[in-house]
Each structure stands twice: as structure tokens, then as C-alpha cells.
Amino acid sequence: MQVQNAESARLCFARQILDRVGDKWSIAVIHSLGATTMRFTELKREIEGISQRMLTATLRTLERDGLVHRTVHPVVPPRVDYRLTELGLTLLDTVCDLMGWAVEHADDIGEARAEYDARLTDQQSS
Image (cartoon, rainbow, N blue to C red; front, side, top):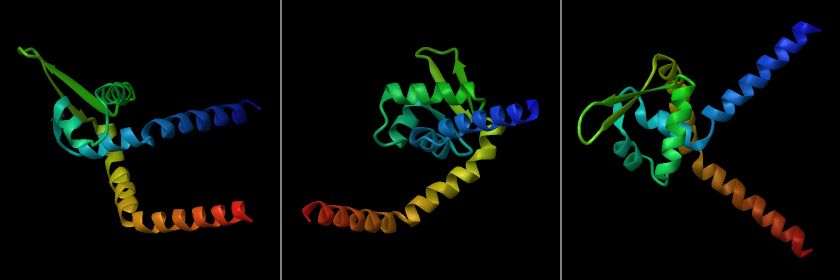
């Protein structure tokens, strides 16, 4: 019984991790950082549509999970750099593959959505 509970707890925690690293902003941050170091403003410019508040929250969560390292430089004005940690770098290839898949199949997904919406509209009209 304890083994089953321990396995269930590990799976639950794994789902929480997937929720975190699988959301659109985390994927965008990991993909944008890649193997380089970037400042907050560079990331904000790179990731279209992300608000300052959302970027801050995403970076904090990724830092907490050990995927992003934050370096504060003692200069005026303050300068903060972000980079993927070794753990974060282990996720980079997977994120790049996922982004590549999404780009490659965007037209297919668009067509499938249009077909679905047309069928739904036809069913509602009947």
C-alpha cells in the first residue's frame, strides 16, 4: 500500500512539474534563453505578448524549480541576467523539439480547427 501511495505521489508531483514547464510562457522563456544569458528587457522584447508581470512571475517560478539562474550585478542602475541552469539545459532540446513541431504543424492544426468549427456550426444549424 505504501509503495502505491509513494508512486502516486511521484506521479502527482510529475504532473505539477509538467504543468509548470509546459505552460506557454515557461516554454517561451526556456526557448528564448537557450544556451545564452539574457537581461530581463531582452527577454521581454524577445517574447511577444508577455507582460512584465507575467515574465517576472515565470522567471521566479523557473528559478524556484532550479531551471533558471538569476544574477544581480551591483551596478546603478541594477542589472539582472538570466540563464538556464544545467537542469534547465536538459529541458532545452525537448522544448526546441516541441516548438519546432508546433511551427511545422501550425497549418495542419489550423485546418483541423476550421473543419471542426464548420462541423459544429452545421450541427447547431440543423
